Image 1: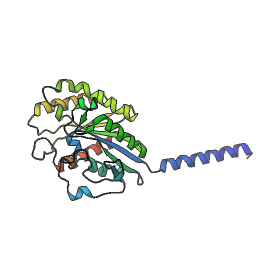
Image 2 (image 1 turned 90 degrees about the vertical axis):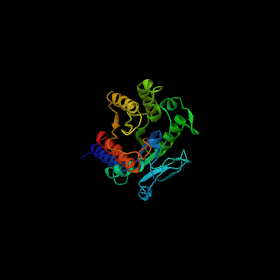
Image 3 (image 1 turned 180 degrees about the vertical axis):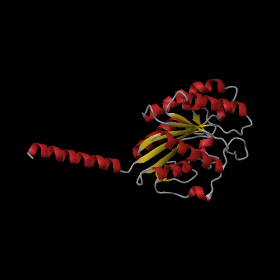
Image 4 (image 1 turned 45 degrees about the vertical axis):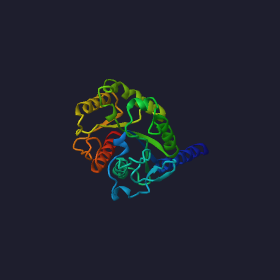
Length: 257
């Protein structure tokens, strides 16, 4: 074999080795939690929700990376509770390469309406969209943003807001994707519960979510059938939060190969 083909073979071998190393390099899978109180969490935190795993990370109020345990959200100190984030990560983790990690970043604020997210309103001392941008930037420093987990709509389930709600969904999701710089970013939207005393308007929100998802191949709707409220006909109880976290994770597994 002359020198030129030998060099070519060596080059191909080195390239293949580099590619293999890149494929095996540990990755951090980043997920953004956004919406209002049922994403921020109002369930009771129990001991099982505080067990940490070095492969499941989050951030504290200063943006420092820490091992995740509930409660994850910190924006409303007097209202914090169990959300679905840790359950989501625990369910998804076994499907990832053994050295990869998950980072769950909280941005949800209870009571926030869709228009307040679009308008970057200051709500409960949080500028909603600015805070989202800030948390996306932190996530991108540590890994790749894989999806947004969204649960919101209770604040828009009323006569004043419901007519405009369907048109706001694509606006906000487009804004989210623009911030993340990924036009095909998967977004998972949770239904409102079926237990509301305001069920007609809540189901209007759910129909709007489903109708939009039918037009966007990168949006999935997470069903809430069978989930129970905590006694207020608004917020999922602890069991419901853990279950919907599993549903978000299983939907992600089904739709993202």
